[in-house]
Length: 61
Image (cartoon, rainbow, N blue to C red; front, side, top):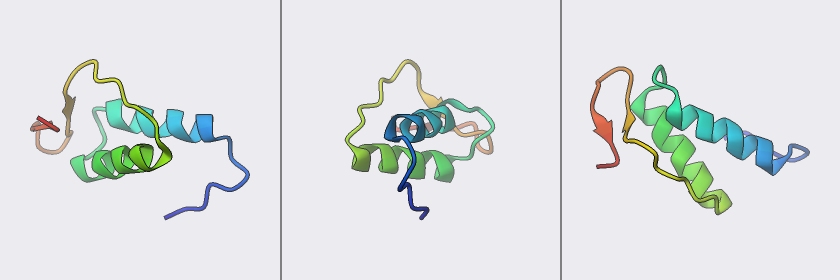
């Protein structure tokens, strides 16, 4: 996993949230992004179910 020292935690969180909502991102990458956000203590607001691009399955439900 990458080291985020020197990076703005708000920008890192924004990038991880973008990963969650990108329809071209696979389920495994979305799961890792969600785990990192949880580790950072960031609440993720669910606007709609997150779908994995490669399977079309709804994640987290």
